[in-house]
Amino acid sequence: MTIHEAVRQSFRRVRRFFSPGRIIAIVLLLLLALGVLSFYLGYLSSLPAPFVGELEDVSAIQRLLVVAPHCDDEVISSGGLIREVLLGGGQVRVVIVTNGDGSFTGTMVEFRKLYPKPQDYLRSGAGRQRESLNALGSLGVPPEDVFFLSYPDRGILPLWKTFWDDDMPYRSPFTRLTQSPYDLTYNPQAVYSGHSLLSDLCSILKDFQPDAVVAPHPHDTHPDHWASGAFTALAVAMQKEQIRPRLLLYLVHRGDYPLPRGYLPFAPLLPPLRLVNSTFTWGKATLTDEIRDQKGDAIELYKSQLPLLGEFSRSFVRQNELFCEFVPHNTARLVHDQDITPVPSLWRTVEGSEVTPIMEDSARDTVSQEFGAAADFVALYAARSERELWISAEMRGKPSRLVAYSCLVRAANGREVSKEQIVYPLNVRSRPTSETKDRFVLTRFNLEELGYPYTVVVSFEAYYPGGRTIDRIGWAIVNLD
Ligand SMILES: [Zn+2]
Image (cartoon, rainbow, N blue to C red; front, side, top):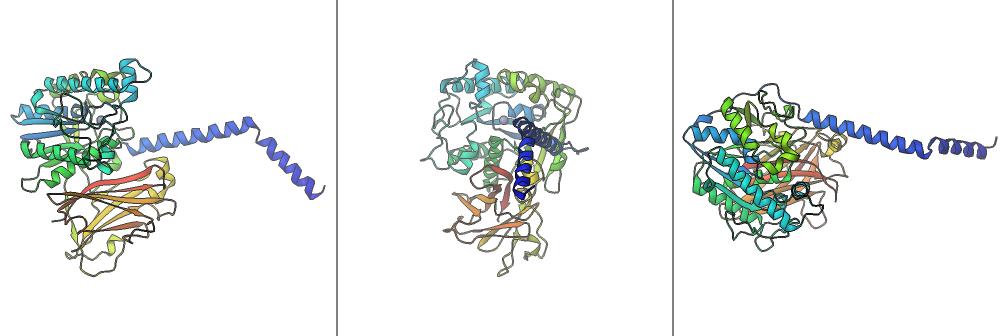
């Protein structure tokens, strides 16, 4: 047999092995393996912690402000706490950021239409406002204490990142509007912009002067939840003159959280084990049986949500509600004229102490994080010098050329809010304000360009250029005073 024939024969063998049927079987097997892995990682990332202590000083809360991204999050997260504060003689106000008018499947099911029209989304939003008023009313919150900001559903992250100014408002792809048409709107003049949303939150805070604010946690994976938390954190951090309220953060959407799912009123609600670390202090607000049942009844009043999300919502009717107390750090001060390094353990501080993370992040949450250690964040660090703010993100692996990193800050000095975004690798025009070493990416912001802020809300993202986000760490509040 000549070499030629031998090669031809092995080709034939390979071709026979890869018959169309076999190829389909291999692809199906690979997809199945990927599915099993992602299910496993999702499950692993939300395995509940075995034990969590009680939230401190719940009975001391006299003026509670609850911020909900959509109509139902207020009761899902805090229905019991709301009731408890009211029974203790305190006051409660509720802010609902969007009317949840951007759910394609929800609106499809509600109006039995294959292609809902803008007016269907608006009808759905108005209906959801009524449901919130009913449910909150059943817990003792009168309609005048419920503020519907009426910003666009699924549009809160774009407002945070891009559509900040009033002269370039965001347009909802569902209602096709750039301003709220709802009768129930806190500020009817407001357009869909980040600036307007922040102003609304600031004026409500100023007016009510809460001693505790409840808002979504930065580890909530729903973009509206994440961004509603970021807006609230910035608004709270900007209240410089008043005593800053406690910031209590709640989770609704993350992997399979809460586990187990379903109506289990005697089970505790516990945080995902991977989110229990030195930067997050979780606490249970234990409910009496009566309050828990009232919360359960209130959840049944969100009728439009029950067909699709009933089991999920009822998973929050538990022995307790769960909050993470956010304690902002005082930012470390860097010694003048030191070598620039992304490795925080080498930063020399005026205090002489080691810089500890401002936030820790769970690793291996998704398939793309499992295979992309370079894009899997584990911690975030911050420090300042006279002129610069240093933010360093730590990954599970060394930075890769295939991954892009972006650090976004929204900085406030009491009068203005500025935004700066630094992306690594750098494009040709940008100045070298970011670099990598070991498993760290450092970005440096010029404080003068940020307007000498006294507070900054920061987040880091890793993504394939032009692709979707693989991991995000933060938002986190950095105090610069
Ligand atoms: Zn929600």
